[in-house]
Image (cartoon, rainbow, N blue to C red):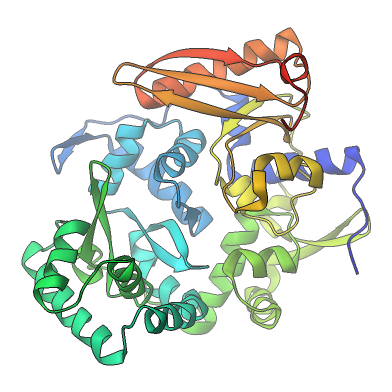
Length: 405
């Protein structure tokens, strides 16, 4: 039975609470605030502030996993919640506190390095089944995949915790008799990541690199299954709530039975509340928190940000007609969104050069002059994140060719 339609007041209340849970509301109200900066240290050729590393590690850990199919967008998802720059997020990656892999839903996420092994072991099982079927379609049988494991380990072991470019990994497969062409290399290496053998190291320019997980994260956290399930439920609800059981099931890619067991294992750390006739899970810590303000703060969020991707039901943030504008063609590719007061009001895009970035904002309705000024201010924050000068273009969709064109 579908949930009752949300009134605008209910939508705004849910969206404000979700923004606060996700850590974005703080950047709305304390725009420009930077993490505590201490004496920088050198990590892998990068100058790293321990405060920045700690901020990046904290926000990724609190979310458990952050969608990272689009890497530039994933870096901004962290930056918008921490006040760090792109260089600082990459420096935290170089310090091996976070990385990128396939822990669930068969897609890439940023994960804190200590959580890599157990999240893959718990949440990647259904994705692995799909990957095995895909390997079979590509002509790779179990013996071939076993050979791939041996070849990849042999190629990566001498690298230690330094990543090897994807092209070099594919060369090693070809030299060992496994043709990586036609997506075979991409699919089988992703499968090894889901298995917890391999993860991505720091990118080499635009090319991903791979490293053995044990070399990248030598001090993993190893919870038992019940503790792991409880942790998944608790961290998701804390960073996304209020949420439904179906939101949690959709986010993990697991069944409702798995979801309900995980919620039960989280015990009294989670509770329920009712909004507009629907029961939502909330974290007990949110009960004593101040009510989120009625801010009209503006956000420019990346296309695959957790604020939208983290929910099965996104009706609090946008209508079904508006969701079709965010995912044109229904192809699973989410455009970056403009959020005002927690509600999506349009999309945006960027064009980056070596020295500047052009941010083009396409609202679905005319914005007030005050809101346009806030959009420009947030775009300047994005420029600081990229270390680029910013030019902002706000397209009047109504005057140009109408909403949804």
